[in-house]
Image 1 (cartoon, helix red, strand yellow):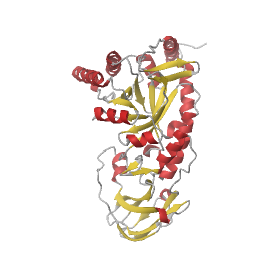
Image 2: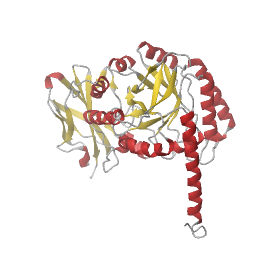
Image 3: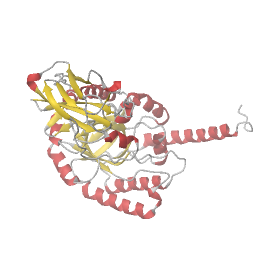
Image 4: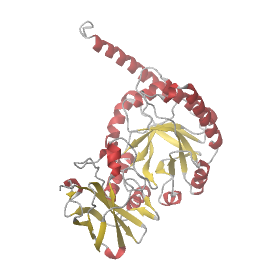
Length: 449
């Protein structure tokens, strides 16, 4: 028996926990009894072993990418969905997607919740936002390419017992979207399977039709985390809205805090394993997944997530085609293994003196000199400094540094930069079939004189 006088806080916690459990199971029952209008263009259907997404009367499993370009290429390799992160040029993107046979998940960007600087406390902000969302939904709700609306990306939905200004506005926006467009579901994208955000959403925003998760290295724990949540709420419909290789926030660091980026070949291996985690999931709630990033994106480096480079496609795309089409063609087109600087790898914390003559070498599983060309670049690694200093003032076009003086097959000789600081040497390997592979190595120039 718990002694209330000796343990008042434990007693209060126990009461709150019991109330939450009552709320959980009440919401669970309400969710299971919720009727669905099957005349809708897109809806989520409850089936014996979970849920199923229905589009135009047929089951639809989300298989695609998040990005904003190369729609035709996505369709050709077996993709059926593109996620757009904003509404800029939305009409053109929707039309292009329709012509390529792609469904579109449209993000509706709204400000992230911040407890210390709560944008939603200003009523005029909420009024303007609701009007904009209403106009947007009315304008595009009937487009045949539209699959669903995604209300916000990683909004930091708060874990609270009482609705606040953000939650109230968030719920009003859901109601507006449902009223203006009853034919398409509404989701929101969370940063992983959050054990705080998800219960709070279930309690305070039960009208949300489904959830989506942005997941990279943490996807390894998706089944375990969802099982814990479903034990209270029951199975809930969801899709993985971003899936990819390890992000820079998950990567090994050098001694000067530079994230070590994996080769594109290693990224392809990770994506293959993570796709299978999703595809093999038997929880009944998964409605599909989207790979990140379909296009060219600068995040810490130009190569970290970009799947396209000018007219060339990453070798990762061939791996995706194999997965989506269930084919067994050789996905390692280029055979990239890793890069060495003077015989050392990135994890060796490579430090050079200024203006030293050094050699970079790319190792291949099978070297195909007749079929590839290699380009080399050196840049100041200002991206990692800005990222970890939380300044976010990374230059869009940093100046190329270093002097390359000799090229031989898979090697290059170069002089290190004269100025002290962090740098990165990049290698881009292109083949005759239109694919590319990438690798880079961070190093530090230290002037000891």
